[in-house]
Amino acid sequence: MTAPDGTDKPHTAEQDWQHRGSCRGADTSMFFSPDGERGHARARREREAKQLCEQCPVLTECRDHALTVGEPYGIWGGMSETDRTRHLRRARTHHRLQTPNLDRSTTPIDRNGPPHNHRLLDPGTDRPSAPDLTPRTESCRPRAG
Image 1: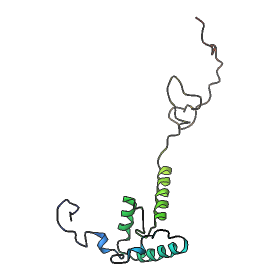
Image 2 (image 1 turned 90 degrees about the horizontal axis):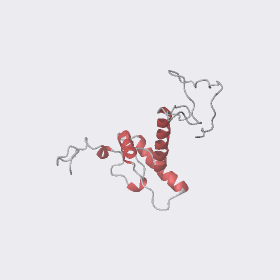
Image 3 (image 1 turned 135 degrees about the vertical axis):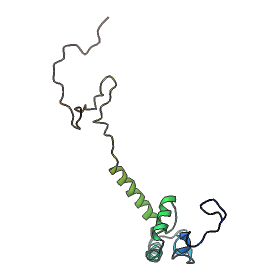
Image 4 (image 1 turned 180 degrees about the horizontal axis):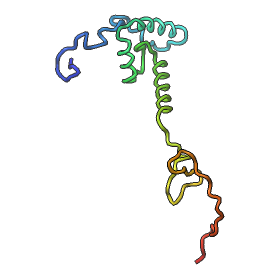
């Protein structure tokens, strides 16, 4: 087996978190749903697997692994497929809320003047500028000629 540094040194239990998991040697059917499993049977199996995970010394490493590589099946780090999907969805939503978003309705764009749905901002502020109420002297129609 190749070590993370690219050499052919064998892994030791201290280097590989999977060797230190409470699930090591447990029946894998506790962690992975058989075909057609639904309802109470699935909930009971997941609950039992999660109870084993609660006291696991590598719970964090296991969970991080599952979230990082996108494990599609099974209980990993005390999280089911559904738990991981929800967690990732919340994380994306939280990230979007924390990331500055350009509001195109208030961002000035100079293409021979802003489109009708954009508001100009006063220079140096975040506030829209006051509308220009000065009467126009030239016609809006194209000139003949």
